[in-house]
Length: 388
Image (cartoon, rainbow, N blue to C red; front, side):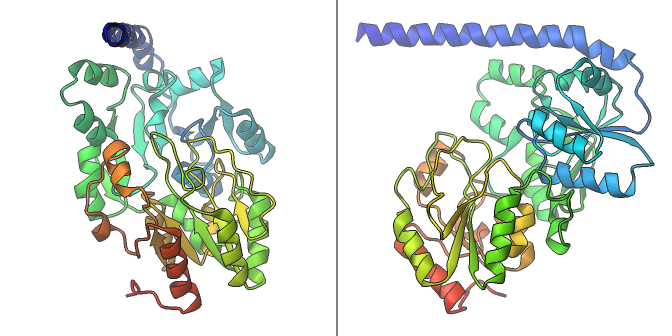
């Protein structure tokens, strides 16, 4: 008992020291870096695009960047900020404007940036918040789901933890956006207005959804899983029904395969009998270790790659708590929801803001039996109870 008390006390002291250290670092960053943001003159029409995670090239930032490159490249100077060397090399190969970060050139460019365009909250990390302190900020965000997000999530979890709130503020966790792009009046009012600080919000939709209504060109296919994209296109032409399984990640880890919720051998037999092909596309955040290469009826799509060019070739989507279904609904195709761990997820991972059954327009399945039954009902019998 005494050992446990000592261990807990030590951990609390260690955590407290860590919090104080982070406050000191953030204060120094404010004192040393932010003044240069006021001193260094901004360059007119200089725009920086920053992607999610390690500035990967996908999402709304990718497609808005390509739009600017196609139609407005003479009106402004713009760059994609790449943290990954492969992304940098690939964009460079296609003649697209890109800067590698971190580098002296990238830091100077950030200080001179007039407008920064992002679709995530990780752009503030690695001191970029301080470099871009006085730049105009345009937030495209990366999804309209039903989970608590950003400011709303942090407030809800740490509203009594003033010290953590101070740290988050100093680190730039609550920036004020000059312009925030929403998708609808409903999401503006019920989600984004509670989650972000902003001066202006407009409802324009998401740039990544434009790929649904045009044939992808070579630039749109940058950072996609091109090999598997072509494979799925061929299977589609051969008459296979394509099913995309695209779950979100769990903060505490876990997925339907490693937890044996889905029997993959049984699923492949089911697919073979009904001329179906499953595409597994997991969230880009975690590192998955699956070996599905020997399964003819299943394709494991690279989870670090852009999946949006593939969605028009998908006949049915299966997801759980991911906002990807709101994009897919623009194609007017069926969605099955597979929240096999619903109670655990909302209690231990993420809280949701709306009634799950109300916000998700599709059948709910909690077992593989239910899942296979609904797939047959929708794709083989052509009976979808959620068609309007």
